[in-house]
Length: 260
Image 1: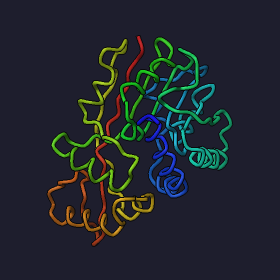
Image 2: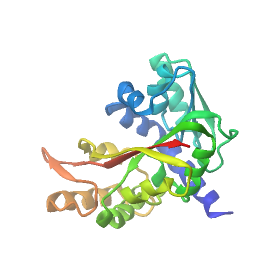
Image 3: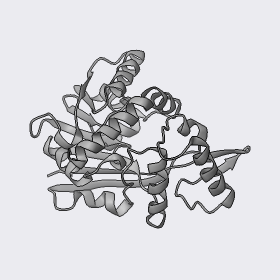
């Protein structure tokens, strides 16, 4: 079995376990603001859009009112079920959900005006290949958007080691330069790149989505508590103590390209 197939099994294992708790955590956070998303992507009413590695489908549902149709695709059936539940709760009809692998997107070339992904690339074995697949199914003049965690370069090694303990399906968090380089050598034009830090998230909410295999949750609590107490952010999570509880903050970047 290839390393890619082996890793897909890890993703299926982790996200089948995480599906309900991950959907709860992401649902409790501020959802993508449709106006901000639409200003960035400049959708047209007749556009077809695709969210790859969609999880509970937050981007797909936020964009849906501005386009003709959105397809959400994910490797994990349990995540797609959470997306369907979220869709039913908000009454949006022009979205459907399919199983699929970002490394072999099951659509023909140049089908979609918008292809997007959020919080997925740090799980990929071959991010450059995945970007190429997103580009392949995007039509000329279409937009490709990727949003993901991007630790500072000097902290990415510690971040990766800690995140692999917390979630064994993690591979590597791209740095800002690595994310921007996804478009290198392709017929794309970078339209936007932005980086910001999320508001503090309670560590316990994140650990509720965590199913480590090489350590215990208490081990992880100790690691994050030590980092928060140090005030040095050695791990790259921006760990801080708020009212005695550990909170973490993710350094997120959003990249937008247009296909030439």
